[in-house]
Image (tube, rainbow, N blue to C red):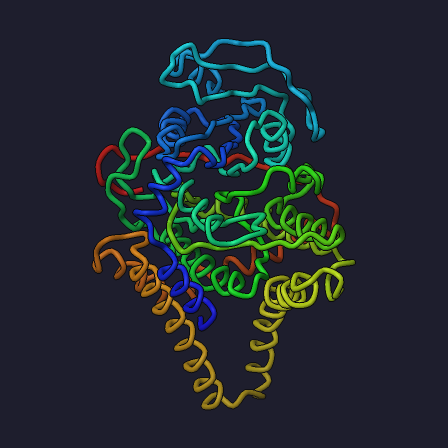
Length: 448
Protein backbone atom coordinates (compact mmCIF):
# COMPACT_ATOMS: atom_id res chain seq x y z
CA UNK A 1 0.00 0.00 0.00
CA UNK A 2 2.87 2.34 0.86
CA UNK A 3 4.72 1.70 -2.41
CA UNK A 4 1.50 2.08 -4.39
CA UNK A 5 0.80 5.44 -2.72
CA UNK A 6 4.31 6.65 -3.63
CA UNK A 7 3.82 5.60 -7.24
CA UNK A 8 0.38 7.23 -7.49
CA UNK A 9 1.66 10.52 -6.02
CA UNK A 10 4.61 10.55 -8.43
CA UNK A 11 2.29 9.90 -11.32
CA UNK A 12 0.04 12.81 -10.34
CA UNK A 13 2.97 15.20 -9.95
CA UNK A 14 4.49 14.35 -13.33
CA UNK A 15 1.29 14.42 -15.28
CA UNK A 16 0.97 17.88 -16.86
CA UNK A 17 -1.67 16.38 -19.12
CA UNK A 18 -2.87 19.34 -21.14
CA UNK A 19 0.65 20.30 -22.23
CA UNK A 20 1.82 16.72 -22.75
CA UNK A 21 -1.23 15.69 -24.75
CA UNK A 22 -0.91 18.74 -26.96
CA UNK A 23 2.76 17.93 -27.51
CA UNK A 24 1.95 14.34 -28.50
CA UNK A 25 -0.76 15.40 -30.93
CA UNK A 26 1.35 18.07 -32.65
CA UNK A 27 4.81 16.53 -32.72
CA UNK A 28 6.01 14.94 -35.99
CA UNK A 29 8.07 12.53 -33.85
CA UNK A 30 5.09 10.97 -32.07
CA UNK A 31 5.46 7.17 -32.16
CA UNK A 32 2.87 5.18 -34.04
CA UNK A 33 0.96 2.50 -32.12
CA UNK A 34 -0.68 -0.69 -33.39
CA UNK A 35 -3.71 -1.95 -31.45
CA UNK A 36 -3.85 -5.76 -31.72
CA UNK A 37 -7.12 -7.43 -30.71
CA UNK A 38 -7.89 -11.13 -31.35
CA UNK A 39 -11.51 -12.04 -32.03
CA UNK A 40 -13.02 -15.50 -31.65
CA UNK A 41 -16.81 -15.85 -31.81
CA UNK A 42 -17.45 -12.25 -30.77
CA UNK A 43 -20.45 -11.41 -32.96
CA UNK A 44 -22.46 -10.08 -30.00
CA UNK A 45 -20.14 -7.12 -29.38
CA UNK A 46 -17.69 -6.97 -32.29
CA UNK A 47 -19.07 -3.86 -34.01
CA UNK A 48 -19.26 -1.70 -30.87
CA UNK A 49 -15.84 -2.87 -29.74
CA UNK A 50 -14.14 -2.10 -33.04
CA UNK A 51 -15.77 1.34 -33.02
CA UNK A 52 -14.31 1.83 -29.54
CA UNK A 53 -10.82 0.92 -30.74
CA UNK A 54 -11.10 3.23 -33.75
CA UNK A 55 -12.24 6.15 -31.56
CA UNK A 56 -8.81 6.69 -29.98
CA UNK A 57 -7.79 10.34 -29.59
CA UNK A 58 -4.27 9.76 -30.92
CA UNK A 59 -2.65 11.03 -34.12
CA UNK A 60 -0.96 7.88 -35.47
CA UNK A 61 -2.34 4.40 -34.87
CA UNK A 62 -3.84 1.36 -36.55
CA UNK A 63 -6.32 -1.25 -35.34
CA UNK A 64 -5.54 -4.88 -36.20
CA UNK A 65 -8.40 -7.31 -35.58
CA UNK A 66 -7.30 -10.93 -35.80
CA UNK A 67 -10.22 -13.18 -36.71
CA UNK A 68 -8.97 -16.38 -35.09
CA UNK A 69 -11.06 -18.88 -37.02
CA UNK A 70 -14.42 -17.70 -35.64
CA UNK A 71 -17.30 -20.13 -36.19
CA UNK A 72 -20.07 -17.55 -35.79
CA UNK A 73 -20.82 -14.37 -37.76
CA UNK A 74 -17.88 -12.32 -36.44
CA UNK A 75 -16.10 -11.94 -39.80
CA UNK A 76 -19.33 -11.31 -41.72
CA UNK A 77 -20.32 -8.54 -39.29
CA UNK A 78 -16.90 -6.95 -39.68
CA UNK A 79 -17.12 -7.07 -43.48
CA UNK A 80 -20.66 -5.70 -43.58
CA UNK A 81 -20.31 -2.93 -41.01
CA UNK A 82 -16.86 -1.63 -41.99
CA UNK A 83 -16.99 -2.04 -45.80
CA UNK A 84 -14.12 -4.52 -45.85
CA UNK A 85 -12.62 -6.13 -48.94
CA UNK A 86 -9.86 -8.67 -49.29
CA UNK A 87 -6.56 -7.07 -50.35
CA UNK A 88 -3.11 -8.37 -51.31
CA UNK A 89 -0.74 -8.01 -48.37
CA UNK A 90 2.94 -8.82 -47.82
CA UNK A 91 2.43 -10.80 -44.62
CA UNK A 92 5.84 -11.70 -43.14
CA UNK A 93 5.67 -14.40 -40.47
CA UNK A 94 8.36 -13.15 -38.06
CA UNK A 95 6.50 -15.10 -35.38
CA UNK A 96 5.23 -18.58 -36.13
CA UNK A 97 1.43 -18.98 -35.97
CA UNK A 98 -1.33 -21.14 -37.33
CA UNK A 99 -1.73 -20.51 -41.10
CA UNK A 100 -2.57 -16.97 -42.22
CA UNK A 101 -5.42 -16.83 -44.76
CA UNK A 102 -6.02 -13.28 -45.93
CA UNK A 103 -6.09 -9.58 -45.11
CA UNK A 104 -9.09 -7.27 -45.21
CA UNK A 105 -9.10 -3.47 -45.40
CA UNK A 106 -11.93 -0.97 -45.71
CA UNK A 107 -12.99 0.87 -48.83
CA UNK A 108 -14.41 3.59 -46.57
CA UNK A 109 -11.85 6.32 -45.64
CA UNK A 110 -13.54 6.59 -42.23
CA UNK A 111 -12.14 3.14 -41.39
CA UNK A 112 -8.73 3.53 -43.05
CA UNK A 113 -6.97 2.64 -39.79
CA UNK A 114 -8.60 -0.80 -39.65
CA UNK A 115 -6.93 -4.06 -40.69
CA UNK A 116 -8.54 -7.48 -40.29
CA UNK A 117 -6.28 -10.53 -40.37
CA UNK A 118 -8.09 -13.80 -41.06
CA UNK A 119 -6.33 -16.97 -39.89
CA UNK A 120 -6.93 -20.53 -38.79
CA UNK A 121 -7.81 -20.97 -35.14
CA UNK A 122 -4.75 -21.40 -32.94
CA UNK A 123 -6.56 -22.42 -29.77
CA UNK A 124 -5.02 -19.63 -27.64
CA UNK A 125 -4.99 -15.86 -27.61
CA UNK A 126 -1.18 -15.91 -27.88
CA UNK A 127 -1.24 -17.40 -31.38
CA UNK A 128 -3.68 -14.73 -32.56
CA UNK A 129 -1.66 -11.86 -31.04
CA UNK A 130 1.48 -13.14 -32.78
CA UNK A 131 -0.37 -13.05 -36.11
CA UNK A 132 -1.37 -9.45 -35.35
CA UNK A 133 2.25 -8.57 -34.58
CA UNK A 134 3.30 -10.00 -37.94
CA UNK A 135 1.00 -7.44 -39.55
CA UNK A 136 1.88 -4.52 -37.23
CA UNK A 137 3.46 -1.39 -38.73
CA UNK A 138 4.53 0.62 -35.67
CA UNK A 139 7.27 0.46 -32.99
CA UNK A 140 4.75 0.09 -30.15
CA UNK A 141 1.65 -2.05 -29.92
CA UNK A 142 -1.25 -2.39 -27.51
CA UNK A 143 -2.36 -5.90 -26.63
CA UNK A 144 -6.04 -5.91 -25.78
CA UNK A 145 -9.15 -8.07 -26.11
CA UNK A 146 -11.71 -7.25 -28.74
CA UNK A 147 -14.45 -7.22 -26.10
CA UNK A 148 -12.66 -4.36 -24.32
CA UNK A 149 -13.81 -0.75 -24.52
CA UNK A 150 -10.92 1.70 -24.42
CA UNK A 151 -11.03 5.19 -22.98
CA UNK A 152 -10.50 7.71 -25.78
CA UNK A 153 -7.18 8.79 -24.29
CA UNK A 154 -5.99 5.25 -23.50
CA UNK A 155 -3.03 5.34 -25.90
CA UNK A 156 -1.97 8.81 -24.77
CA UNK A 157 -2.04 7.77 -21.10
CA UNK A 158 0.38 4.93 -21.90
CA UNK A 159 2.60 7.08 -24.11
CA UNK A 160 2.93 9.86 -21.49
CA UNK A 161 5.52 7.97 -19.35
CA UNK A 162 7.74 7.66 -22.43
CA UNK A 163 8.14 11.45 -22.50
CA UNK A 164 9.87 11.57 -19.11
CA UNK A 165 11.49 8.15 -18.68
CA UNK A 166 13.93 6.09 -20.74
CA UNK A 167 14.18 2.36 -21.47
CA UNK A 168 10.46 1.64 -21.05
CA UNK A 169 9.55 -1.66 -22.73
CA UNK A 170 5.98 -1.98 -21.41
CA UNK A 171 3.26 0.17 -19.82
CA UNK A 172 0.25 -1.33 -18.05
CA UNK A 173 -2.99 0.63 -17.87
CA UNK A 174 -5.60 0.00 -15.17
CA UNK A 175 -8.72 -1.94 -16.14
CA UNK A 176 -12.31 -1.99 -14.86
CA UNK A 177 -15.43 -4.05 -15.54
CA UNK A 178 -17.99 -2.75 -18.00
CA UNK A 179 -20.76 -4.96 -16.59
CA UNK A 180 -23.62 -2.61 -15.72
CA UNK A 181 -22.23 0.42 -17.57
CA UNK A 182 -24.11 2.47 -20.13
CA UNK A 183 -22.44 2.09 -23.55
CA UNK A 184 -23.14 3.98 -26.76
CA UNK A 185 -21.21 3.68 -30.02
CA UNK A 186 -18.43 1.76 -28.38
CA UNK A 187 -17.85 4.23 -25.54
CA UNK A 188 -18.64 4.21 -21.83
CA UNK A 189 -21.20 7.00 -21.40
CA UNK A 190 -21.91 6.40 -17.71
CA UNK A 191 -19.95 4.08 -15.43
CA UNK A 192 -21.82 2.03 -12.84
CA UNK A 193 -20.51 -0.82 -10.69
CA UNK A 194 -22.10 -4.22 -11.35
CA UNK A 195 -24.99 -5.15 -9.09
CA UNK A 196 -24.58 -8.90 -9.50
CA UNK A 197 -22.25 -10.46 -6.95
CA UNK A 198 -19.70 -12.22 -9.14
CA UNK A 199 -18.84 -9.21 -11.35
CA UNK A 200 -18.97 -6.95 -8.26
CA UNK A 201 -16.35 -9.07 -6.50
CA UNK A 202 -14.20 -8.97 -9.63
CA UNK A 203 -14.42 -5.17 -9.70
CA UNK A 204 -12.86 -5.03 -6.24
CA UNK A 205 -10.29 -7.64 -7.28
CA UNK A 206 -9.29 -5.56 -10.32
CA UNK A 207 -8.87 -2.45 -8.19
CA UNK A 208 -6.61 -4.26 -5.73
CA UNK A 209 -4.56 -5.82 -8.51
CA UNK A 210 -3.87 -2.61 -10.41
CA UNK A 211 -3.87 0.11 -7.75
CA UNK A 212 -2.16 -1.78 -4.92
CA UNK A 213 -0.33 -4.77 -6.35
CA UNK A 214 0.96 -3.51 -9.68
CA UNK A 215 1.41 0.13 -8.63
CA UNK A 216 3.56 -1.14 -5.76
CA UNK A 217 5.63 -3.45 -7.98
CA UNK A 218 6.02 -0.66 -10.55
CA UNK A 219 7.63 1.60 -7.93
CA UNK A 220 10.60 -0.78 -7.64
CA UNK A 221 10.56 -1.84 -11.34
CA UNK A 222 9.55 -5.39 -10.46
CA UNK A 223 6.24 -5.82 -12.31
CA UNK A 224 5.05 -9.45 -12.41
CA UNK A 225 2.92 -9.07 -15.54
CA UNK A 226 1.10 -6.65 -17.81
CA UNK A 227 -2.52 -7.69 -18.16
CA UNK A 228 -3.51 -9.37 -21.40
CA UNK A 229 -6.57 -7.13 -21.38
CA UNK A 230 -4.65 -3.90 -21.89
CA UNK A 231 -0.98 -3.02 -22.11
CA UNK A 232 1.44 -1.15 -24.36
CA UNK A 233 4.65 -2.92 -25.44
CA UNK A 234 7.78 -2.20 -27.46
CA UNK A 235 7.23 -4.28 -30.58
CA UNK A 236 10.84 -5.19 -31.33
CA UNK A 237 11.50 -6.42 -27.77
CA UNK A 238 8.46 -8.72 -27.89
CA UNK A 239 9.49 -10.11 -31.27
CA UNK A 240 13.12 -10.53 -30.16
CA UNK A 241 11.89 -12.42 -27.08
CA UNK A 242 10.05 -14.85 -29.37
CA UNK A 243 6.55 -13.40 -29.19
CA UNK A 244 3.71 -14.83 -27.14
CA UNK A 245 3.90 -18.52 -26.33
CA UNK A 246 1.02 -20.29 -28.15
CA UNK A 247 0.89 -23.12 -25.60
CA UNK A 248 0.69 -20.79 -22.58
CA UNK A 249 -2.51 -20.31 -20.58
CA UNK A 250 -1.00 -17.32 -18.75
CA UNK A 251 0.37 -15.59 -21.84
CA UNK A 252 0.57 -12.16 -20.22
CA UNK A 253 2.84 -13.26 -17.36
CA UNK A 254 4.82 -15.61 -19.59
CA UNK A 255 5.49 -12.86 -22.14
CA UNK A 256 6.69 -10.33 -19.59
CA UNK A 257 9.04 -12.87 -18.00
CA UNK A 258 10.57 -13.64 -21.40
CA UNK A 259 10.88 -9.93 -22.24
CA UNK A 260 12.74 -9.27 -18.99
CA UNK A 261 14.88 -12.39 -19.47
CA UNK A 262 15.80 -11.23 -22.97
CA UNK A 263 16.76 -7.75 -21.70
CA UNK A 264 18.82 -9.19 -18.82
CA UNK A 265 20.66 -11.68 -21.04
CA UNK A 266 21.33 -9.03 -23.71
CA UNK A 267 22.24 -6.48 -20.98
CA UNK A 268 19.58 -4.03 -22.19
CA UNK A 269 18.27 -1.57 -19.56
CA UNK A 270 14.51 -1.84 -19.11
CA UNK A 271 11.57 -0.39 -17.19
CA UNK A 272 8.00 -1.65 -16.90
CA UNK A 273 5.46 0.90 -15.69
CA UNK A 274 1.97 0.67 -14.21
CA UNK A 275 -0.20 3.78 -14.52
CA UNK A 276 -3.17 4.33 -12.17
CA UNK A 277 -5.65 5.56 -14.78
CA UNK A 278 -8.49 3.40 -16.09
CA UNK A 279 -7.69 2.86 -19.76
CA UNK A 280 -9.83 -0.16 -20.50
CA UNK A 281 -13.25 -1.57 -19.62
CA UNK A 282 -13.94 -5.26 -20.13
CA UNK A 283 -16.98 -7.49 -19.71
CA UNK A 284 -16.13 -9.91 -16.90
CA UNK A 285 -17.65 -13.36 -16.28
CA UNK A 286 -21.24 -12.85 -15.25
CA UNK A 287 -21.92 -16.27 -13.76
CA UNK A 288 -20.18 -19.00 -11.79
CA UNK A 289 -19.72 -21.34 -14.76
CA UNK A 290 -17.78 -18.82 -16.85
CA UNK A 291 -15.81 -17.59 -13.82
CA UNK A 292 -14.76 -21.14 -12.91
CA UNK A 293 -13.57 -21.81 -16.46
CA UNK A 294 -11.54 -18.60 -16.47
CA UNK A 295 -9.94 -19.14 -13.05
CA UNK A 296 -9.16 -22.81 -13.65
CA UNK A 297 -7.32 -21.70 -16.78
CA UNK A 298 -5.49 -19.01 -14.79
CA UNK A 299 -4.49 -21.57 -12.16
CA UNK A 300 -3.24 -23.92 -14.83
CA UNK A 301 -1.37 -21.06 -16.48
CA UNK A 302 0.32 -20.09 -13.21
CA UNK A 303 1.76 -23.53 -12.49
CA UNK A 304 2.72 -23.87 -16.15
CA UNK A 305 4.57 -20.53 -16.06
CA UNK A 306 6.52 -21.40 -12.92
CA UNK A 307 7.50 -24.76 -14.39
CA UNK A 308 8.58 -23.28 -17.73
CA UNK A 309 10.60 -20.48 -16.06
CA UNK A 310 11.84 -22.34 -12.98
CA UNK A 311 15.46 -21.44 -13.87
CA UNK A 312 14.67 -17.74 -13.27
CA UNK A 313 13.13 -18.12 -9.80
CA UNK A 314 15.75 -16.93 -7.28
CA UNK A 315 18.31 -16.34 -10.05
CA UNK A 316 20.11 -13.03 -9.47
CA UNK A 317 21.06 -12.82 -13.15
CA UNK A 318 17.49 -11.78 -13.89
CA UNK A 319 17.41 -8.63 -11.79
CA UNK A 320 14.42 -7.95 -9.50
CA UNK A 321 12.25 -10.41 -11.43
CA UNK A 322 14.41 -13.35 -10.35
CA UNK A 323 15.45 -12.01 -6.95
CA UNK A 324 12.16 -10.60 -5.63
CA UNK A 325 9.07 -10.88 -7.83
CA UNK A 326 8.98 -14.56 -8.76
CA UNK A 327 9.99 -15.86 -5.29
CA UNK A 328 7.26 -13.67 -3.78
CA UNK A 329 4.66 -14.85 -6.31
CA UNK A 330 5.68 -18.47 -5.79
CA UNK A 331 4.76 -18.20 -2.11
CA UNK A 332 1.83 -15.77 -2.11
CA UNK A 333 0.20 -16.57 -5.47
CA UNK A 334 1.14 -20.15 -6.30
CA UNK A 335 1.46 -21.82 -2.87
CA UNK A 336 -1.17 -19.71 -1.08
CA UNK A 337 -4.23 -21.55 -2.50
CA UNK A 338 -2.66 -24.90 -1.56
CA UNK A 339 -1.92 -23.72 2.00
CA UNK A 340 -5.43 -22.29 2.38
CA UNK A 341 -7.10 -25.38 0.92
CA UNK A 342 -5.38 -27.81 3.27
CA UNK A 343 -5.51 -25.30 6.13
CA UNK A 344 -9.31 -25.26 5.93
CA UNK A 345 -9.57 -29.03 6.42
CA UNK A 346 -6.88 -28.96 9.10
CA UNK A 347 -8.98 -26.40 10.99
CA UNK A 348 -12.03 -28.68 10.83
CA UNK A 349 -10.05 -31.68 12.09
CA UNK A 350 -8.50 -29.67 14.94
CA UNK A 351 -11.93 -28.32 15.84
CA UNK A 352 -13.37 -31.85 16.06
CA UNK A 353 -10.40 -32.91 18.21
CA UNK A 354 -10.93 -29.96 20.56
CA UNK A 355 -7.40 -28.68 19.84
CA UNK A 356 -8.37 -25.06 19.08
CA UNK A 357 -8.41 -22.14 21.52
CA UNK A 358 -11.58 -20.56 20.12
CA UNK A 359 -11.14 -17.26 21.94
CA UNK A 360 -7.69 -16.74 20.47
CA UNK A 361 -8.88 -18.02 17.08
CA UNK A 362 -11.66 -15.40 17.07
CA UNK A 363 -9.16 -12.63 17.85
CA UNK A 364 -6.93 -13.81 14.96
CA UNK A 365 -9.91 -13.97 12.60
CA UNK A 366 -11.10 -10.47 13.49
CA UNK A 367 -7.58 -9.06 13.04
CA UNK A 368 -7.17 -10.66 9.61
CA UNK A 369 -10.70 -9.72 8.51
CA UNK A 370 -10.16 -6.11 9.63
CA UNK A 371 -6.95 -5.93 7.61
CA UNK A 372 -8.71 -7.32 4.50
CA UNK A 373 -11.46 -4.70 4.77
CA UNK A 374 -8.90 -1.95 5.46
CA UNK A 375 -6.98 -2.94 2.33
CA UNK A 376 -10.18 -2.67 0.29
CA UNK A 377 -11.01 0.74 1.79
CA UNK A 378 -7.52 1.98 0.88
CA UNK A 379 -7.79 0.76 -2.71
CA UNK A 380 -11.26 2.30 -3.08
CA UNK A 381 -9.85 5.63 -1.86
CA UNK A 382 -6.95 5.33 -4.34
CA UNK A 383 -9.36 4.75 -7.21
CA UNK A 384 -11.57 7.67 -6.21
CA UNK A 385 -8.54 9.96 -5.71
CA UNK A 386 -7.16 9.40 -9.21
CA UNK A 387 -10.61 9.89 -10.76
CA UNK A 388 -10.78 6.23 -11.68
CA UNK A 389 -13.66 3.90 -12.37
CA UNK A 390 -16.66 5.79 -10.98
CA UNK A 391 -17.62 9.40 -10.39
CA UNK A 392 -19.94 9.19 -7.38
CA UNK A 393 -19.40 8.09 -3.79
CA UNK A 394 -22.61 6.05 -4.01
CA UNK A 395 -21.06 3.84 -6.68
CA UNK A 396 -18.16 3.00 -4.38
CA UNK A 397 -20.54 1.91 -1.62
CA UNK A 398 -21.36 -1.17 -3.71
CA UNK A 399 -17.65 -2.01 -3.84
CA UNK A 400 -17.41 -1.61 -0.07
CA UNK A 401 -20.32 -4.05 0.38
CA UNK A 402 -18.41 -6.53 -1.78
CA UNK A 403 -15.32 -6.02 0.40
CA UNK A 404 -17.28 -7.02 3.52
CA UNK A 405 -18.61 -10.24 1.94
CA UNK A 406 -15.66 -11.26 -0.26
CA UNK A 407 -13.67 -13.32 2.32
CA UNK A 408 -16.70 -15.56 2.95
CA UNK A 409 -18.04 -15.99 -0.60
CA UNK A 410 -15.72 -15.07 -3.45
CA UNK A 411 -12.27 -15.82 -2.08
CA UNK A 412 -12.98 -19.49 -1.20
CA UNK A 413 -14.31 -20.05 -4.74
CA UNK A 414 -11.16 -18.56 -6.30
CA UNK A 415 -8.99 -20.79 -4.09
CA UNK A 416 -10.94 -23.88 -5.17
CA UNK A 417 -10.74 -22.99 -8.87
CA UNK A 418 -6.97 -22.41 -8.59
CA UNK A 419 -6.53 -25.86 -7.01
CA UNK A 420 -8.53 -27.41 -9.85
CA UNK A 421 -6.29 -25.65 -12.37
CA UNK A 422 -3.18 -27.05 -10.66
CA UNK A 423 -4.72 -30.51 -10.50
CA UNK A 424 -5.69 -30.50 -14.18
CA UNK A 425 -2.16 -29.51 -15.12
CA UNK A 426 -0.55 -32.23 -12.97
CA UNK A 427 -2.89 -34.87 -14.40
CA UNK A 428 -2.05 -33.74 -17.93
CA UNK A 429 -5.71 -33.11 -18.63
CA UNK A 430 -6.25 -31.61 -22.06
CA UNK A 431 -6.97 -27.89 -21.85
CA UNK A 432 -8.72 -25.60 -24.26
CA UNK A 433 -8.90 -21.82 -24.33
CA UNK A 434 -12.66 -21.88 -23.85
CA UNK A 435 -15.30 -19.37 -24.93
CA UNK A 436 -16.33 -16.32 -22.98
CA UNK A 437 -20.11 -15.90 -23.23
CA UNK A 438 -20.93 -12.27 -23.95
CA UNK A 439 -24.22 -10.59 -23.14
CA UNK A 440 -23.33 -7.37 -24.92
CA UNK A 441 -23.79 -3.90 -23.51
CA UNK A 442 -26.92 -2.10 -22.41
CA UNK A 443 -28.00 0.99 -24.28
CA UNK A 444 -29.25 2.41 -21.04
CA UNK A 445 -28.36 1.78 -17.44
CA UNK A 446 -29.64 -1.70 -16.62
CA UNK A 447 -28.47 -4.79 -14.82
CA UNK A 448 -25.45 -6.53 -16.33
